[in-house]
Length: 227
Ligand code: CTP
Ligand code: MG
Image (tube, rainbow, N blue to C red):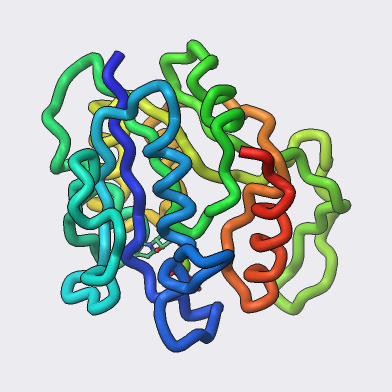
């Protein structure tokens, strides 16, 4: 099969409260975006192309070291993460044998081993990295009282990458967005289309850098990696 990656990087990073979108903040001398792309670019499976979705008129991209990389194709993202990913998918030549690996620009601590685990799954519904819930999970009422405790054994926290056949994912995202449904990851669009993607046990280190304190955490996790 042919593998193409889509990296949504068109967000503003409001929860980070920094002076620029979080994917352009530096950790250990490289931007978060560069860390995330580097893991994909150096993976031995030869990801054929990386579609990078950025905000229209993104002023930070021009100094970006990977701009002229032959594997990277920069396109415009959309209003939500799902719009950005769908725009990316529309730039890929449709082909029955193509699978897409979608990975958040804001997850710089991904490793090749994580990607290998996803690629090893032979499930036509696709697969996502996720971790089992550690804390006890409470469902809340409108006024923040406990309605009930969920069975933690069946709760997983979704990460990226998420890996799907291109044609199925494009149709699923398009339908979900047309119906105005909130899809915060690719798997949720696939679920709405009737598929049951596989959960692949990932690492809790693969954080989505979201809040200011996540920068130090990501720096620590990156410093612990040996590749
Ligand atoms: N993203 C995107 N297009 C959007 C919104 C988000 O490509 N319209 C990307 C972000 O750049 C990020 C990933 O989707 O790499 C995950 O989103 P999130 O962590 O929510 O990033 P932001 O939306 O930028 O942050 P916040 O929600 O705090 O504003
Ligand atoms: Mg967001």
